[in-house]
Amino acid sequence: MTKHLTSIIILLICFTMLTDVWAEDDESIGKKAFEKACASCHGETPIPRAMSREQLAKLPPEKIYSALTEGLMLLQASALNNLEHRAVSLYLSDTEWGTVEKVKPEDKVVFCERELALPATALEEQPSWVGWGLDLDATRYQPLEHSHLTEADLANLELKWAFGFEGAITVTVQPAVVGEVIFFGSPNGDLYAFNRKTGCAYWKAETKAYIRAAIIVAPRENGRLTVYAGDNEAWLYAFDAQTGEMIWEALTDNHDYARITSSPVLHEGNLYFGLASFEELAGGSATYECCTFRGSIVSYSAETGKLNWKSHIIQEEPKKTKKMTTGVQLWGPSGAAVWSQPTIDPKAGVLYATTGDSYSAPAADTSDAIVAMDLETGEHKWFVQTTADDAFTTACTAPNADPVAVEECGPDVDFGSSAIIRDLPNGKRVLLAGQKSGVLHALDPDDNGKILWQKRLSPGGVLGGIEWGFVADDKYAYVPISDVWETTSMPGHAGGIYAVDFSNGKELWNTPAPTPDCLDIPGCNAGQPAAATLLDDVILSASMDGHMRAYNKKSGAIVWDIDTKGEYQTVNGVKAHGGSIKGAGPTVVGGWVYFSSGYGLFGMPGNVFLAYGPK
Image (tube, rainbow, N blue to C red; front, side, top):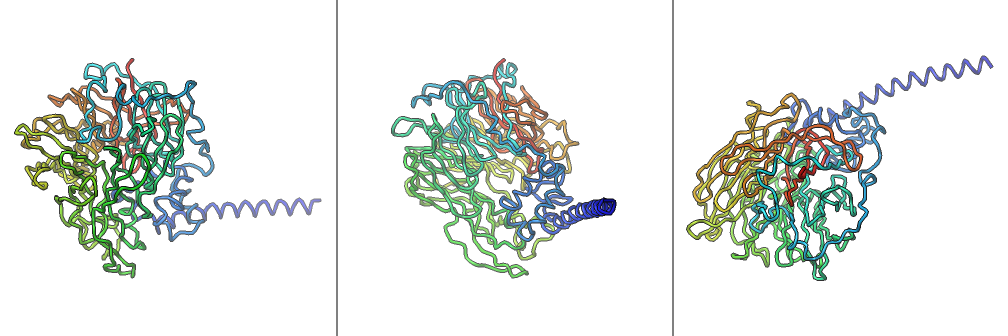
C-alpha cells in the first residue's frame, strides 16, 4: 500500500512539473508565434488599422483564435499551426480560455408582448429614418417633421435603454427606424427589429456576417414592408419587416475578401450599392498574391433579388505583374473599392460613386475618384480622379515588408463618404465630394465633373481628412474632420468641424475639437471620422474621445455634449461599455437619438448601442 502511495505521489509530482513546463512552453510558443506572424503589424508601434497590444489584451482568447483560424487574420496566421494559434491567443489576451460567458446576446433578448404590425404606408405616415444619406442627394439631413428635435430639446434627452453586443469591441451601426420599430445589425451576425422606445425585440434574423451598412425599409409589390441589408461577406438580404422571414438573399461578389459597407439606396424599384473588400489588409502579408479585387457598383431588383447589372470601377481585369523577392506573384490593377452609398441623380440619369485607392501599382485612373455611371446600364459616363498614384495596402506601413511590394506606395487618401448634390443660386448644380486628403471638392455634375473649386480643410492622411460623412443644407456643407493620426505630435488637435459655403468654397465658421478628457487611455483622440447628421438647427457629430456633440448650425458653438464612455446596464443583460465613435452617425427620429459606441480597431473599444429619448 505504501509502495503504491509513493508511486502515486511521484506521478503527481512529475505531472505538476510537466504542467509547469507545458505552461511555460505555452507562453513561449505564444510569444514566438506573435513575433513570427503578428509583431510586424501589432508590435510596439502598430501600423495603421492594426490593433495595439493593449487593445488585443481586452479580447477574449477565443475571439483572437477565431480571427486567426477562420476570420480576418486567417491569411496572416497561415504560417502558424493550431497549437500556435491557441498559444498566441492566450499570450495576447488578459482573459483565461473558457471564462467568457458563452451566451449569445440574442439568447438574452427580451421579446415584446405585442405583435409587430407595420402598414405599407408607414414610411409616408410616420417619422422614419431609412438608409444612409436619407435622400437621393445623400445629404444626411433629417427635417423637423421626422426628427421632432430642435436645439432646445437636446437638454431634455436622457438615456432610455442600451443594448450590449457580447464579445464585441467595435460596433458601427446605422439603424433604420419606421414608426415605433428600429432595425439594426449586430457584429455577431444578426439583424434585429426592436421597439425603438422600450428596447424589447420583435424578431431576430440570422445573417452570414456583420451588417454595418445602413438598412433600407420599403414596401414590395404586395404591399408588405421589406428590410434590405448587406453584410461583411458581400451577401445582400431581403427580410419581411413584420416577421423577420427571409424573402431572398444574393451573393453580390465571390471574391474571398469582398464585403458590403456601402449602404443600398433604393430608386424606382432597384437597389444600388458599392462593393469593397478586406484585400487591402491581406496585401500586407508576405505570402499573399496581391491583389485581384476590383470595386464595383451593382444594381439589384428589390422585388426579386436578381442582378440588373454590375459595373467595375476598374474596368481592366487584373493580370500578373511582378514578383516579390520571395517569388510570390503580384497582380494588378486592383482596388478602387466603393465604401459609401452611391448618390442618385435622376435628372441626369446617372449615379455618382466615390472610390477608394488602388491596391496595386500603377494606380488605376478611376481610383481616388468620382465616377458617374448610367442608372440603366452601369456604363461609365465620366470620371474625375482627385489623387493619382495612390496604391496602398498595409504592406506600405509594415516595417519588414518585401521591398518589391512597397516600391510605389501612395498616401492612402481615398474617399469614404458619399458625394452630395446641391442646387446653386445661379440655377446650376454642384456635386460635393469630401476626401481623406482633407480636401472638399466641388464639381459640375452637368459638365462631366468639371472642378469648380477645391478647399483644403485639414492635413489629411491614412485616417485623416473627411472620412465617413459630411452633411449639407441648401447653402452650406458642414464637414467633420478626422485626422486621427495625422496630428499625433499635437494630441488634442485632430477633429473639429467646418461650415463651408458650397457656392464658392468660402469658410463660414470652424469649431476646433475640445481637448479630449481621456488622453491617458490608448485610442483616445479628438478625431471626428464618424458620419455627421444634420437637423434644422444643429449638426450632430461624434468623436474618437467617446463624446457625441451637437453644434449650432449658424455659429458652430457646441450646444450639447454627452460622454458615452463607461459601463451600461443593458436590456439584454450583456456587460457593455462605450468607447470611441467611428463610422456610422446618429439616427434621429421622433425626438429620439440612436447610435453605437465603441471602436477597438485603433480607438477605445466598446460594445454598446444607445437610445436617448425625452425625459
